[in-house]
Image: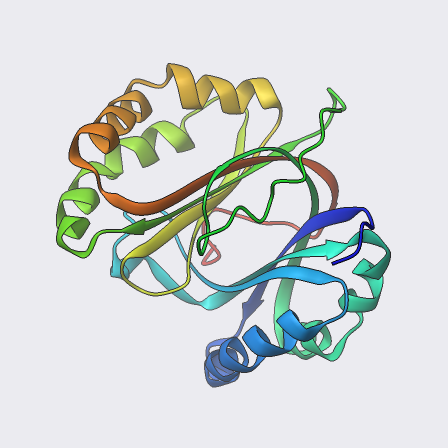
Length: 232
């Protein structure tokens, strides 16, 4: 990877049920193709869910995602590449967010892909957050029982815009992508919400995760809309 300025780009595509076979095939093929695209240093194809329970029943087979770290000068080339165009042609809705990392703690696939953080933040900017965790297999059921109060707290938080569940597999690899009106709104949820504080305490005492990551981003650009549930 060169020293070119990098950005993080998150795509979410909503498709019709009849296109689900295409999605499964593309998840496998695009995983390889995106990693070979010039300028990309990190790429993950993602399934999504409602983010209400983080159990397998959350899965939404009509919405799929892609998160990449890419050289900024290569962004529009990637946006018009066959990888994205093939999804776009089959989508009923597309969301794209261009992001600049503000902070990133932890690991995703044994590395921190968002470690090129910026100290500059436009106070008017919206904020995105990505959380991702690899849950220890024998802790799954305990984790699922503890999540619902946190989700309720999340969706009721002032400044909250939307959140969806993301994952690389139906079980054991869980995360969220969320949007917030401001950095202060996200901080209030993270550090003042009683349910979230309880979940943090449980994480420390129970040890749910074998790997986890939490990253905050300034939203540089948004195209399209995203909702917490694509089945509106």
